[in-house]
Image (cartoon, rainbow, N blue to C red; front, side, top):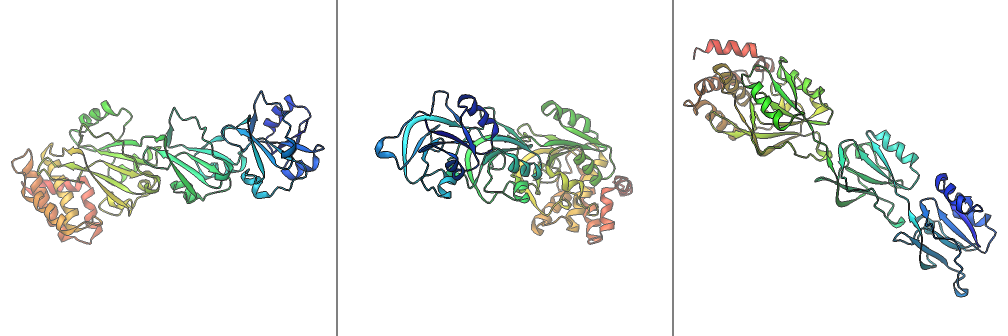
Length: 438
C-alpha cells in the first residue's frame, strides 16, 4: 500500500482520515509530502475533500502509467484525491489549480468536496475575519439585509481553475447579496459596503431576497392621520409611527432613528395608500444613497407628481440631514430619483387650515426655486394649476388661496433661507392662514 499524505491545515478532516487509516501522514504542501513519503507512489488527500466510505486507497497503476499522476473523481470533478509518483517534479501552478499536465483520469469515486463555510457578515471586519479563518480557499458571506432562499443549500462548487474570482448571486433583482468569496480575490471596504465587487462573476440564480425596509408613518396634526395609519396597519402591521414631533426635518430624523434597515419608507400623515402599492421596491446596494420619491394624486387639482408621495430615504443620511434647507426631501442627498408609479392620494383637504397650509408650503418652494434640479417649465405649470384649479373641490378655495399666498411669499423671499424656513413652522403658517381673511 502506498503512503497516504494529508495536505493542509484542516485538522478535523485529518482526524477523520486517521480513524480509518492510522498510518496516514500529514504535510503542509506537496513538496513536503513527497519528501516524507517512503513509497514509490503516494496518495495526496487534500484538506477540502471527504474520502468516500468505500474507497480504500488500494488502486495500483498499470506498468505503462508509472510516470503520470492518477486523478480520481471528487464529486463530478477530477480535482480531489490523486496518486502521485514520489520523484515527479510538479509545478506550483499545477498544484494551485489542481490541473496536472501529465495525468490519467480514473473513473473511481474517491471523494466528495467539502461544502464551503458560511459566514454571516454585518461589517467589513466580519468579512476580513472570514477571509482569515475560513478553512478553505472559498467561503460564503451572507449579509444581514437578505433572506436566503429555503431551497438554496450553499453547495455550489467551482473547480480550482475558477477560484481566482468571487461569485455574486442574485438577491432578487441584483447581484448584491450572497457572495461565494475567493481568498485569492480580496475586495475593499467600499466594494463590501456597496456589493459592487470588481473581481467577480455574476451568477444568475436567485438565492436570496432583500429583507423589507422599515416603514414609518409620520403625522402631526392631520385630522385623518389616525384613520390613515389604521388602514396601513391592516396591510403592513409592522409600520412604525412618529407623531407630534415639531419640525418636518426633526420628525423625519426621529423616524430614521426608529429603523434598523439602511433605507426606510416614509408615509405622510395625510396619505391614503393605493391598493396596488406594496412597499416592495428594491434598491441596489450601490444606489443606497439615493432619495426615491413616488408620485401621488392631488385631490384638489388632480395633478400627479412627487408632492406628498411615498418616499424611500437612506437612513443614515436622513439622521444627519442638513436641517437648514427649507425643502427636506432634497436636503438629504445629492442623488434623487423620481419613481413614476402612483403610491397614494395626498388627502390634505380635510379642513380649511390644512388645505391652505399645503398649498402655501408647496407653492412657496416652487416659486422660490429651493427644490434642487427643478425644471422651470414644469415648475411654472404646477404653480399655475395650484393657483387656479379646484375651487369646486372640498376646501379647494383654501388650497388655492394658500397656493397664491405661498407663491407670492416664495418669490418675495427667494434666496433668503431664514425666511423660507418658516414654511416648516406650523404655528407661523397658522398665523398666515388667520391673516388671509379667506
